[in-house]
Image 1 (cartoon, rainbow, N blue to C red):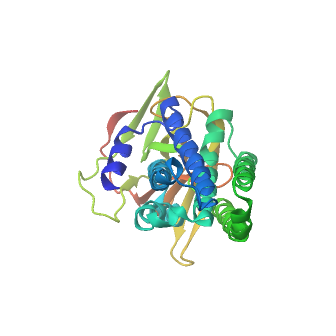
Image 2: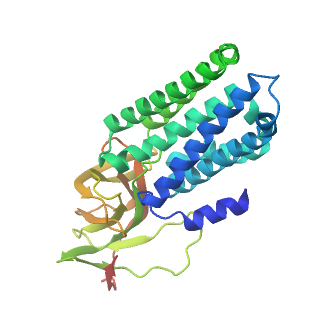
Length: 340
């Protein structure tokens, strides 16, 4: 499992690459066919010969397909996620990846395999539809759920045709499990826990100034320590009245068009809450390897703890840049930097 995950993490590149989509589609097909075959054999205990000999291999094929899907989902959703916001969904995916090895014998149980299949179909459709349609948002998410339900319904019809008696015994567990998965993923989405895949933050940082000349972005950066302990954030020393800029590059699949938001928030020690100071939205277009670049400006920021959330219009967090603004008591030395 560990070596397979490491291999996938190295070779899986862009989520919109045709090879990536082909591999994931093949995993889904293998999972469906192996579940159908195993159900056919299990529904006919008297069956012998080649079919019976292939039964253990179909269980292995199911585990292999699900293992490949969970590994890919952990990789792609993990790249797209802000852990502080999306950790519950990432925890579920990692649990699925580990559980695929620990509970491999349960793949022969029809209800167990069907619920896993629906989870895989929904998780795949969430980012596959934006890749193929070039759209994102709540409507696309709801369509991905309907697509997963439609494919799953076709699989259930085929299972019923191959072994009606066995499917009648398990349908309540299958329906309850699939409904639970559907509601859980919707809760993750509408509470902004779901990572915004297929979007992913390529880079983001805060600077004293950012300017664009032609296709080149230039920034003036304040020197920071080469090593920063975990949990610490950079500090910008800003003179009274001076602005600061947040630069980000967000990867999006080819032809995908959407908007992203820079939400500037300041921490209020009295209320112990983050208060939104300003929001800047701008459209992006996918396709660039290093991500679609853009920046926003905050005029005269007050001293204190700040963060900028980089979000989709429906509230999914693409990235988060925390920093501290301090009052400059003397001119600050800065250096020019060309941004990717």
